[in-house]
Amino acid sequence: MKAYILDLDGVIYRGSSPIDGAPGAVNRLQDHAEVLFLTNNSTRSRSAVAARLSEAGIRCKEHDVITAGYAAAVYIRKRYGAGTVYPIGEAGLIEELKAQGHAISEDADFVVVGLDRDLSYEKLRIGLQNILDGAKFIATNTDPVLPTETGFVPGAGAIVRALETASGQSPVVTGKPEPPIMDIVLEHLGLDADECTVVGDRLDTDILAGIRCGMRTVLVLTGVETMASVERSDIKPDCVIQSIRELLVAPGRR
Ligand SMILES: [Mg+2]
Image 1 (cartoon, rainbow, N blue to C red):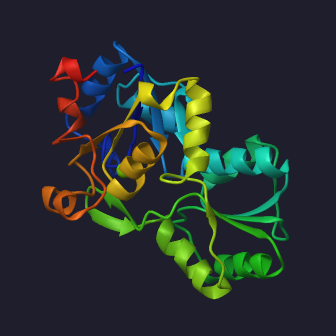
Image 2 (image 1 turned 120 degrees about the vertical axis):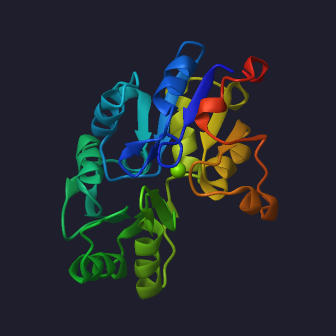
């Protein structure tokens, strides 16, 4: 394998704490292959994610990180050019939108929704008004929940659903498991899909994204899924391991 594409929440972190043994496992992986960090979480910018990983002792630069916020910003720029965006999201999403040349406005051509822990009725109202006025509705991801050290918290998908219900429209989703973010990943790495392994904790985002584009897939059980949910699902990873710590246990798998 030339590259490993690692999800963050539930693989490397649980909430704000690194998962036991994860930093060492990632650094060992980096000795053998290229490592890209790929997250549907849009709350932090790429540089903030890189800084956080570095703090946890993981070798990482901004260039090694792709977030769903970045993917949404790049998707809009490549498809439509720089535009006006009303974001429902946190600082990391807004930073990535601005970095791709988009202007932030309450009267916008695009409504981009990510996780927003300061969500308000007023934000939903402005988002809805823009969509009803013809703005394109874009979701960074539709993850229903986010695993934290104290259990699950509502994910971006819960916010997206509120706007979907109000507007009667479905968004274009740019994050995993949809193609926009995976197209960006492959272009970024300059590799073919069969040279890449996706490592994630969610079947319906990480693993499905990898399967859809022809990558090898590894599920870890430190996040959302359990052996029971794996058995129930039609989405079958190539390999299930307890934790990212086990990733290099079998060198032949590289
Ligand atoms: Mg995850």
